[in-house]
Image (cartoon, rainbow, N blue to C red; front, side, top):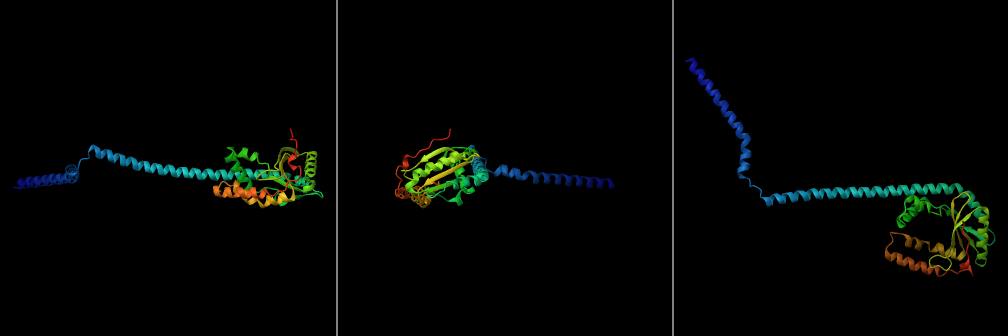
Length: 274
């Protein structure tokens, strides 16, 4: 009797274990079987569409990332160029400042009863103005920033105003004095009779090797140059619209048409240093 009961208990225990195992297997495989039985099987066309959608999604993300990266690089490039142009401008100013005292004294020695210096307060070009010039020349002439900076000749600039009646003589006398002091004339531009600017512009190199610009005007041509400076800036500003440039050009022509040229001024010339 006892043995029969034990056999029944063992059989009942085995049955419960088997039932538990079957239920566990059902829980694991039933979802898979249901999906496999009732979900629609994707066709080849469906798979192609899904692949294209995934490709487009990934490409959109890639394009956005590339655009953001390009913008970041452009911003970094502009910032780097600004830093570089200002660094070069500082170097030009430092070099010119070291020679400024002697150059100014030489220019003041040119003054006499018939001529005077004007704009001495602006003899050193500002850092911002120099940086803009470096950037503009580099872009407009396809130059590196260092090369553009080396071509700047008006970090130190002076204006000598001579009376109209003695203008020709005063120009020659001034240049003779400077050459005798050790200056070299590297560029001589006679713009008398020009449409947008009237006067003489001379590029010199000081005895210390520093570039110097000297403009030679009459009182009237200098006044008109100053009055027309605003429209000159509009004409050279790359941000100006075509309409603004056209209007500024008309005004520049009108201003300079009023300049009275000293007799024979357009014939003045000067040999360049070898």
